[in-house]
Length: 487
Ligand SMILES: [Zn+2]
Picture 1 (cartoon, rainbow, N blue to C red):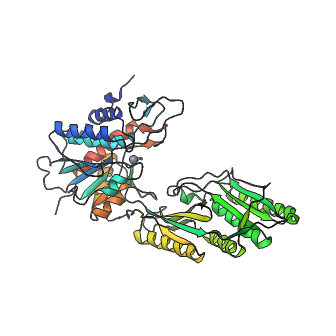
Picture 2 (spheres, protein in one colour):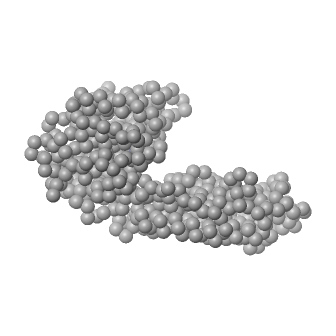
Picture 3 (spheres, rainbow, N blue to C red):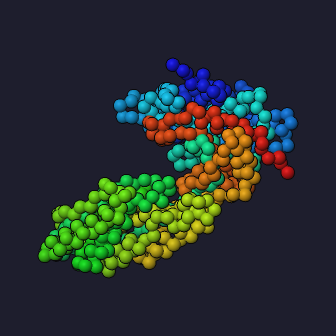
């Protein structure tokens, strides 16, 4: 069987295979850091570390390349540790066992860590080479990308000197990324005004479930069902027709996920039991038909349950139903410069009880345009202020606005065309990348992001396309050779 150290380019695969043996899940990055520090010492290269755990190894220009702009090759130290339940593997101790299968490298039932081990390996292959032509190079290895980007968030100004940054953490060879979204959360807290549940009523539990859910950045444009929105629509409509009383409501989990499930407990007079059931069935049918193409497994149920102790006062309930029903959700704007890219979006992520009697409504906004992110966050805030809720925002993180006029983008398209006689696809994503965070401290950086093809990242199915690694490597060397001249 072929070994991965026999694959081409040798110098890159050699380091990738060494990295596989080093445990390095997020927040356990000591061993990989030590390995890199030793690497720098062995090659007599400058190496420094900041207080957030980021590491920088620098190498001077090769002869004749001194006039080029400094290039930062950026990858992240950590990997996600996921495995199949049946596999014995301790991510804090055991090496990843890689295998070659049909043109792919994968692990044995665990994540492979090609995200972003391949970026680290490429950087080391360049740092250790005596043949590759390049201007001043700084290899930046950021800490803790996968569990909060705290490395990129904490990087101090002046840590690196270069002005061109190549992020080696994308997962589709042939695509060049030039933008990402920033994000912020907007959280509304509503002190509930309750009263004892009326006598001579019955309680019903309404459930929305079976939805796909998904990442609130990557998948917001798919028109998936949002369980909280569907439930709110039912409650608003039912309230127009019947005298329902809301006892409680809950739905959604993570702030960055589209909610899959939601439930509400309402009380009604027993005499309308049949009427509301008929209305419920027709409502569920309508929503099911609307969402059929994207949410074939959606399910709505209503069943009688035990009476709750209290319900929300009618006036507040009315305002709550109106607010949730009218709350903006989904895609807010598409990019005007990149076809098909969602520019701005908002996700009604969850509704849950916090403590005894406070309803917490969590929403999350994203945009690649910083001012548009602020705008949608403020709109959501003003929306919930009308309800009489207290509203707060998270710190948020900045986006990376696509710049179609970027010098590095221009060079990258040329290099790609010359090497492969085809056009690279230029893209941006509606999720976060570390690049957005660098811009806070280094506003003048010219950046692109690219990488070999990785499928199933963050899962035990993670696999790396061998042929794409060779193309990625040739493209990277081309970028170094054609790096812009400093003015
Ligand atoms: Zn990554």
